[in-house]
Image (tube, rainbow, N blue to C red):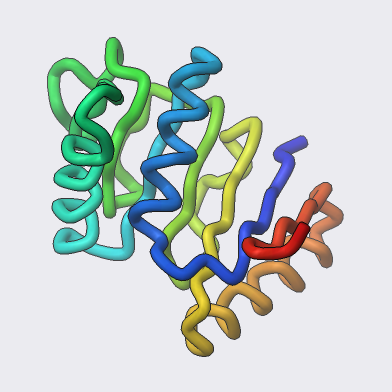
Length: 141
């Protein structure tokens, strides 16, 4: 069953997700980063290139011919064919279609109240479906 991890109180979702992608890549995991739309997907793609002068996180946009070989895929379309099933990182305000295909889902929730409210609704929905949930609050020890 898919494990769902909520990461809340995130001040900068793009930077946070880039660091999460770096950690997953170092652990040899494959992940899909689901952006809220084309603009956020482009910003995420750019952020992955500029995260660090010394780190390289191999990534492509969904639909790229190299997607099967690349450990990190960026998309805003949850209906697109995705070759990876390890981890899904959700940056949207909705429950991703087909999330149950992934071994693990990361729900990234910012400090914005609208984003937090949407995250709470997703938490309740996953809980009603009996998915195993964890919750990490950024900034707390």
